[in-house]
Each structure stands twice: as structure tokens, then as C-alpha cells.
Length: 181
Image (cartoon, rainbow, N blue to C red; front, side, top):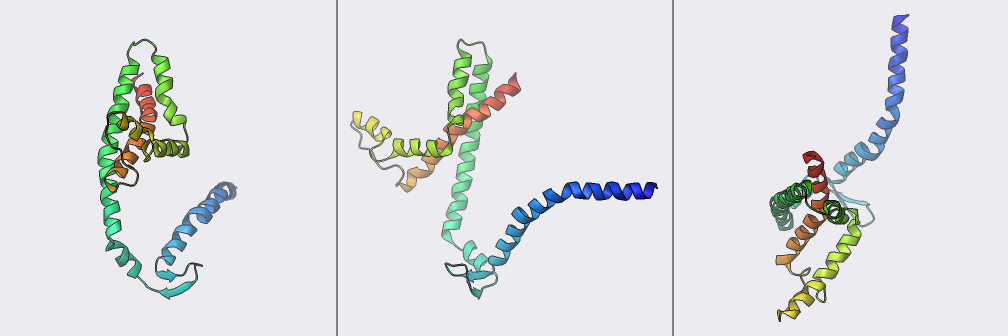
């Protein structure tokens, strides 16, 4: 009797797990496996197999200068953005945790960038840093010739970092403020 009950509970538990296992298999494991198999093939634009190239795709990628540049840009991005956004978020959370006047208003104002969609933030920054954008208009007042910041290889990563810091600091500030309180 106890053995039959145990088998029924085991079957019931597998039936509960089955939908999640199917979703995991169909939407995660199968695509990963399929992408891994495709990585050993050379495909045309219609995804028809042209040739089996084995590990050649991996050696091509690892010797590509663009990959190395992307890797170092990612390291630079992480090394700059994470400490700055953490410091600023903690600083603002500490200030808003004190007894300053209007702190609820400041909390709302600081949190607004988090509520804005990524697409809208991108458009705002593209407008600000464009050739005829807000930054160049401001510089023109002081007689400084502006540039197209988004086309300049030396500045585009810095603009992306600034956008990310500006949009994520309020979220982390909220988490740190909750921790402080």
C-alpha cells in the first residue's frame, strides 16, 4: 500500500515538473544545442549548409581583431561603469536617507530615469550628442566647436557609459535606500 502511494506521488511530481521541463527543453536547451551544431557549419544567407568547417569558425573568431577590441571595450565599460554607478547610487541613497527637506520629491525626481524606456533614453541621448544636438548647442554658446559625438570612436563608448550610469543609478539608489532604512 505504501509503495503504491509512493509511486503515485512520484508520478504526480513528474507531472507537475513536465510543463516546466518542456518549456526549458523547447526554448532553452534545443536552441543552444542547435546553435552549437550550426557553429561547425558554413551557411549561406538562407541558412542552407554550404560546407562543414569544423572548428574553423572558432579559430576565425578568436583571431578576429574586432572580438579582441570588443573584449577590451567590455572590460573598460565594466571597470568604469560599475564603480561609478555604485558610488553615486550609494551617495544619493545616503543623502536621501538623511533628514533633508523635500526628500520625497527628490526620490521621485531621481527615480524618473528608471521609469523611462530604454528606447526613449537612447533617443534622448542620440538627440543630446548628435551633431546639431543639445551638447553642441551648449558648447557653441562658449565658442567651442562641437562634434558628432556618436560617430567619434574615442567618445561613443563614453557616451554609452554616461547613458547607462544615468539610467541605472536611480534603480540601485532605491535598493541601497531600502537597505539603509
